[in-house]
Length: 403
Figure 1 (cartoon, helix red, strand yellow):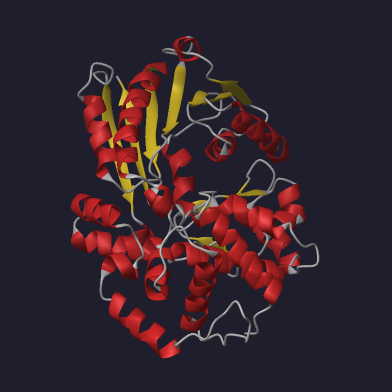
Figure 2: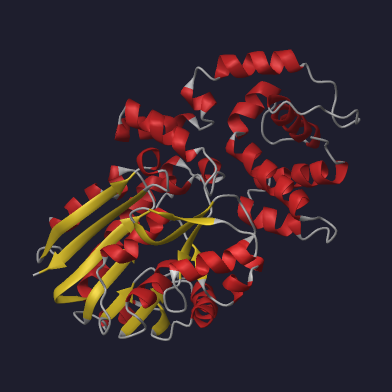
């Protein structure tokens, strides 16, 4: 592979924003790709994938390159050089890339690969926390799986098309997608492609949504004609799935504390042809109180550490702080106790997170069932999804029924 100066410089600039300025990797990559209109699909792919790769393996590469944060521009070039050498890419004779002892890099890589926190490139505290929570064997497998690049998974929008029809439509654009056993609405691309430029996307035939995430809305058992509340709707990936499962019949209230996310949901709902969604910002506790005892189904896709989706957001490993877990567990507890009161007798509620930690998952459900607010509820079923076992994102889903 021949390295091109403008592409390598774009990667190094992006890493500076992510590592030194604390910006989110996905936003930085998005912004970087708009820098030069002449870049083709291959150039853009190189920038995005190389940036994510170095973010994913930051600790390992920094250790091999012998550099420490905050990183100078020269430090970032050294980390890039480590990335290139480990991939067998010949380094060009540029003044930014000082001669790199390839043998020493490979030797150091072999040595550090024997230690999990370096091999999997994770902070000490996170490694210790997850080992304690999941046990050494499961955590070792799980973090290895979470460091793999995530596949591109689509969810067919059944309000507009069928799985078979979508496959054929994508094939016309040269995109090959396969069905996944056990995931009724999912298609997986055999090769990465920019699906957002396809006519199928613009026509609302699909959304990009991981296979594990698609199980959440199905778990809720929402039926056409129900009153369903998505209590932490965000930009609405799961809300849109619920609208399709309800066949656009009934009422689907999408709540969130962030009004800008609900605006994005409105835009997506129009493209999806989902007409039964009613976005409502949570401006005060009154919004929830008004809905007490009125919903057939309530979905709580709770805010969490996001440890199950590190494949998609590798920079979360570096952004997470030890005290965040403590705060988020408290928030989850408040949310489930407050929002559960919207479920009517005989109704059902799903509590879900994209985390793999029991503190955020089964422990939260047990704590809720033991509380005054959870007294009328019982646990119908739960599913702990690990990336190392499913091949998709890590998730937790619990279905609770109200007597």
